[in-house]
Length: 318
Image (cartoon, rainbow, N blue to C red; front, side, top):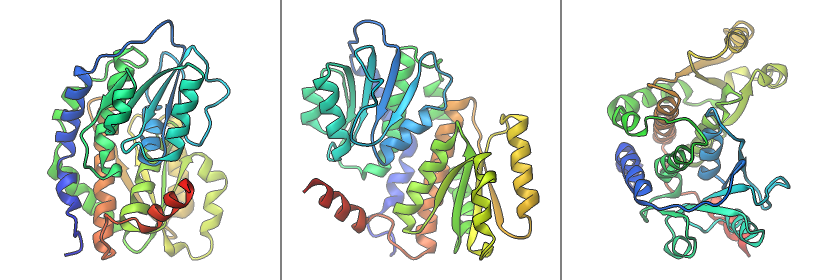
């Protein structure tokens, strides 16, 4: 058995985890003072993927993803800092949280860590015992709920879109796409606003399938990255995250990619489907998780262990 820790069982719970997150968020009481004019969403790894993905929404104020060890200079007392840290063990999240408290900036924490959740008055406490990268549905739904509650983004029909998730269909679609990416280095492209999805798929392929994968935004990739495909083009496959609502200019860029690279590099399309943007982001993220899982099985690699990542994090905290 390749999947020794049964990651598949947790993947199948994705829709129920979304429902669980919504229920927890609705029961959580928040207190924010004054007028907020910008939001910083802080985290690394899966948390950063969530931050990038939610930045795709139409916004009433700037929503800025942050990864690293310091808050941007723009962060002030008119800001809201959302700290996403499932385990509360990552050093960047710890440092950003401490800096926000030191500067007396309002904070909302989304975490499974009881100590941190109890220490912060504005906190969504998530269930424990989940592999952090598989806590994506909990973190994502919680974050969207917060942004919607305070009217930083329009209403997203969260409950309806969660109910529309079809686990079997997403699994099947993920498997079919994984077959096309097998034995290739995936180059994952999306629009600039949807780059978070490309980043999420890259992250999950890296961690689950233990193979190289890279993400970029269109049209930028047309201006540089495709030149790197001249040598050994059959090593690569391009995965395009495609939304039928892309602008005509972006569709033209995708057509140009097909024209230039046809019969040189395999191009796979990941179609976004859903009732609205939230529905599309949620469903596509689920499909991407399955892509990475099935690639791991095709690579004959257990998707759960991440020895190198664990060693790097340990070295960072010494």
